[in-house]
Figure 1 (spheres, rainbow, N blue to C red):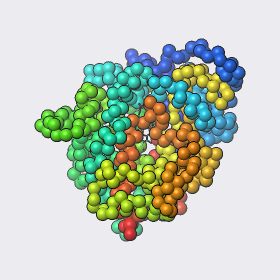
Figure 2 (spheres, helix red, strand yellow):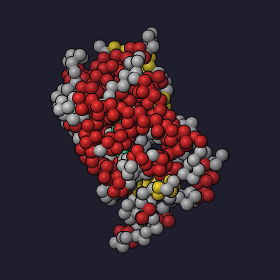
Figure 3 (cartoon, rainbow, N blue to C red):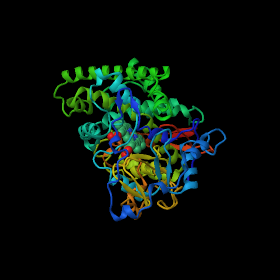
Figure 4 (cartoon, protein in one colour):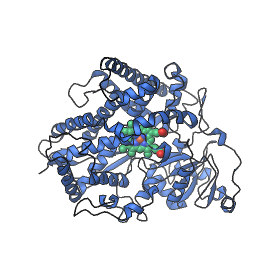
Length: 532
Ligand code: HEM
């Protein structure tokens, strides 16, 4: 069961995001999986033949769905989470959401065995549709800038693999990412220093402005990794281009929700709003490229100064790759990390006993709070990592994972032909009593594989739990490429913040969430006081 309230200004439907596979964007046909469409089943084995036919998957018909979402309908004005939950109550743990207007169906499943089958059969080129506007921007609007360089979020098949294989060692290798620790630590210290000015001087309460400031922390951190540049966004005098870039990124998120997620006619007709979106992309490209050009000049002067940073490694692949990846890091690495961090703080604020336990670990790692964080002293932080995981279990800011089935699959006893969309309802499973006892309780211990101190014992279930019931960063070759960076940032800030402060939740209401591209918290009411 859900233990927190979620509210959205706008009705949202995953299918709008997932079912645009027939689109032709300008002269660029979405290179997704069209070859899979209308293909005859390839399977004739017993399991396939004995499975129930696809048509028998429970779910509403097209007209029924339309009636749900029309004014007065049962799903009118519901958000993603509410919609999913109602549909699940009505149709069960697997249901078919029919494709509208010639678009594909999406199978919604809440069965971890289906997740495993879908992922284990996705092959080396998993298909997940997203950010079609970026594909259009690169390939149709600005081909002279990007050439044939694809981007991770919007590319599929070989084109996706081509870039992912190149950037994996740069962004997924722990040691490579952790070389940024000194600067990420410095940025976290600056943010924690700034907390004094962000909280109310008398009550010490932080409100929603805190989330905006956290976005600046996330921006400052990710832009250091992506552009090797300190933007000064936590100071009173940020770099003017950085401030502009921050504004454009905010616009980008709003536009992207409107044009990549909500139904829109832009693939057929470029509305004035969509043209403004393209201008925002232009400005982000222009500023990002300018920062990269400046960094290239710096690298020339500082030649052979030791390990290559992430940007240098991306540049050695290709400058266009570096620009596209830097843009992606900025687009995908600000709202995600800051929203997840608010969630982490919220759960710790509501669970003082666990917070005290974590504080003890922090003091062991940093006996002197002025000491820097290093690869050595941050190696062994089991309770901190368990706390972060437990927060993301209760509130995974990405509530579902999507794939196009690239093989014929039998899901929950039904035939699902390749080419169909499969939406895996991760958040529901990670909040289910069936897979996590006392699922509403914040219990970091459930993730511990070994005792961390005499009072904190390992949990036997941590070793035997089905890995598919918690997938906050996705799974497989297409898992989140920013996972290591996000973990580094969140661990560092949490260490610094809790080393200095203790946090309490003062509101009667739980933290609220809006669902747009991700779950985004609001209604923050945290008190931060000096830790003893
Ligand atoms: C707490 C923070 C974050 C969460 C919860 C998160 C979650 C996710 C999830 C669930 C996916 C889909 C994975 C799949 O389909 O299997 C994803 C993909 C992705 N994420 Fe993250 N993410 C976070 C932070 C970041 C950061 C900091 C970056 C940038 C450095 C980033 C960049 C990306 C990219 C580029 C993809 C697409 C990967 C591909 O398709 O190959 N994310 N993320």
